[in-house]
Image (cartoon, rainbow, N blue to C red):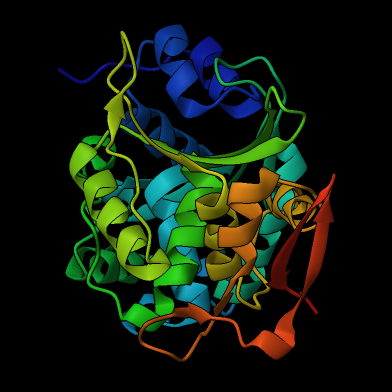
Length: 311
């Protein structure tokens, strides 16, 4: 049954800063109905696909470092509306610069919208783009656009673009932090969180292959539908060396934490394993023992270790 709109409801959907999902309970209409009504009332929104600027509609047809990163970020913090041929990203306002970068790379003329903290999720910066070509291309490589949170699968992607894809997913649904140990040293922790266990299992296998290290099994968070993939120490530092190969797209606050790990002590066990190997981007094995000419003494309290000298 078609529900009519009152003048008060129309005013709410055109003036409120709340997200469409939060307006559902207020105006008693679903998200699709809210967007359709707003588009009819506002010609600029109705012609969203026409005001996308010089949108690169074949952007996801072929893998590149930029498309791999944005696809990974989409798997974490992206959302789709197939009825409107729309995809979008929502993130905290302090990280809005990454959405501005997406806008520039994709050639979109639409603005990044900012919402205050009145909604359930707090302050958000949102970029939405209508391009059915993007949705079709992502579906073609295996990325689910319907019920993405629980049906996410590892995409068909070339190995050389995997670091960019993982970095995008990490910036969306990953975290990195330090923790102090009893002996006074610090450990670096990397954590991935998601509701699709199969996707995290695929990610775990990829990390074990690329980092040449054992990654602990995935665990389920208590009283939630979420799963967690976690590792620390020299494996976390090695992950940073691999995922932050010279790149332009990344969240600055997360990379800044990893950069600190290169100047901090992780204890004798971690220091030896972290620095005795060097990352080889074009080598199939990826990691190999560093030549002796690249090593120098590392002094930690009264003990001396041989590590790689970072340039």
